[in-house]
Image (cartoon, rainbow, N blue to C red; front, side, top):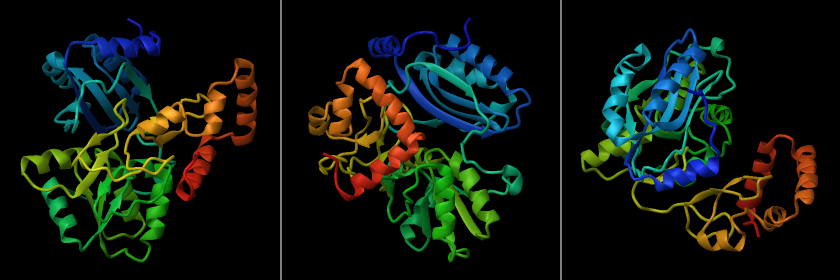
Length: 347
């Protein structure tokens, strides 16, 4: 059995759309010291591939972070297979808020230096000294009281489409930027009660330890993240303090929590919370785009990208060279785009 995908993406997507079986989207993570992450990676790839599981899984010496799509008929077998590895013993499994079964089209298991790319020196502070974990009801009541500081530890494009009411949502492109921004924004609030949240909880583990290291005395985090919050609040029949969509890192790109649209199309400004990537392969920028603009711009982020997409192969090659020379790191392009769309929608 090959230990990686060998089938073209287009074929994989077509196969997924033609599937008749029902799939369940789940996520889980755990910090756990792995002596041989590559060997562990190969082992779970074999096991999960045989069960026709899809997903995006990161393995590192510090543990595992996984978002997966499991055939419903194989779910019991999958959960049983987890018990064969110490890292998975009693690991919390989080289920998608909305699930059409089309979240992933292949199985990808990669070995990374870290589970979350934070750019931090973990030796500089105690990463195990994390904040107090709050269950959904505790977090809900504290947010509802309106007396504490709620902090969104996700990137700007995530909080743009959905967030807790009253939350601080820094305009950060990366988790590392987010940590620096939050520390600076709240530098005079070190004795205040902080309520941190993210999608599934993994970013808050590192963020809470980082903030405690920098002198914040009352750091709390939502256990299980937005996913567990929504599931529990619905069971308790409570009105959610999270409004809009929860951004997810799979083909769906978002799952609605309360049916409300709080974001706007980056090109025309009308209410919209549908993310897509610019169809110009030289750009591939993530943006919010309504159906009308998607048609007008041919699913591109601007007229320039639309023209580039429709240019000849020779012109594309020249543009690619110019693009690489001018921008280098694609994050520069993203930041330039954000500045433009915040002041004047692209046309």
